[in-house]
Amino acid sequence: MAGKSLQSIRGIHDGLPDEVRKWRRVESAARRIFGTFACSEVRLPVLEPTELFVRSIGEETDIVSKEMYCFVDQGEDHICLRPEGTAGAVRAYLQAGLTRSGAQRWFYIGPMFRRERPQKGRLRQFQQIGMELFGASGPIEDAEVLAMAQAFLTELGIAGLRLEINSLGCPECRPGYRDRLVEYLNARADRLCETCNDRITKNPMRVLDCKVASCQAALTDAPEMVGHLCDACDVHFTGLKAGLDALAVPYQLNARIVRGLDYYNRTAFEFVTDQLGAQGTVLAGGRYDGLVESLGGPATPAIGFAAGLERLAMLLEDDEAAGIDVAVVALGAESINYSLTQASGLRAAGLSVVHCGGGAAKRQFKMADREAARFVAVIGGDEMAAGKVALKNMASGEQQTLTLAEVIRAVSA
Ligand code: ATP
Ligand code: MG
Image (cartoon, rainbow, N blue to C red):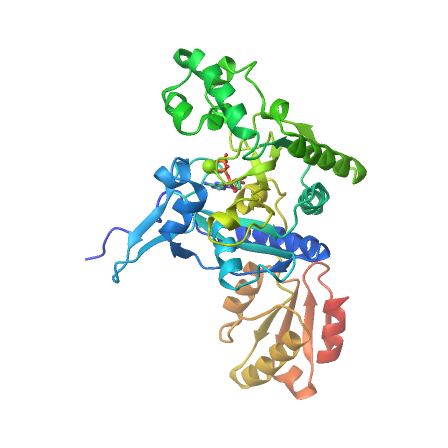
């Protein structure tokens, strides 16, 4: 008895041809632009030790506390499907012993996994295009990383994005600011949601980017990190803004950007659109100078970002299916072999070709029609004897008997 057909896991989507065509556009824009900034692609594992994320992202974050897909494997190892790319990149960087090899500029494209509530723009398996720059500490590098993100999004032709930046300070100045913020939040605890009340002690800066309207209303005059930066952080932030001005990258300050992860310091930024509802952040990142050291390496400044591939794809116009150049119709059993060699010859010239499989003419022409090929090459006994092909241009209806070389020229024109 046939069983009920199975569905994919909620929040996990299939990439079918129309979707993947868009993904590939995003990927090739990334490869091109990142290449011009001398970044190299890395391909890192999807499975990592669970501890890597607990130690880097932080136990009190949404990701580690409730969103990770973890399991114990048959060898009792605690393993996790990566929820993001930075921790694994740092692990790989340290494992390869690259800390003395000068700046490393990496980018990656691949799936990430978070057990979130599925909704528009929020999936449980999604793809990120990200970059990490290890070994650069200055605001100029930050400005260039933001300019690279901007160039990538511009290359995709996505309009209406704005860049928002903030500084998250550093271990020098953040504790003092944190105390003031906690004081402020405690005085308004009754107006904050339950989650935010929990955050006051665990992760108070996360309260600032709570999406609940009543929380935002209670925070109108909350103290801002940018007003409490130490001199070094202030110089860095001023340098970043000057670099962005010099590069003509427009930006706005947003003191509510805190990033969800523990490891960020100083520069934090997001590219945001109003076109995707609540899930409007398409690309986000920041500086994480302490992470390499906290994972066992030498103190190494670093900055990176990640963009959600599916969110970017949602902002792209639909494009035409690539389209088939030629459908080959073989009339009569004796012409089959010859028709196959002609199809091979067209493919060798780089054309996209379907062979309609021989047999009944009516079925083959119907198939050629359904494939929406631009040209149909009809090959029967006469064509074979002449060493030619009868080529029909489906747009104009024009028909010609041509040699293979002439067909290639006509179709490529
Ligand atoms: P959000 O505020 O949307 O939850 P985040 O801070 O969790 O984002 P990051 O960890 O910074 O996101 O990831 C970078 C980008 O990856 C996001 O800006 C978004 O475009 C994409 N992204 C993150 N989570 C998801 C998801 N569950 N589904 C689809 N894309 C996602
Ligand atoms: Mg999130």
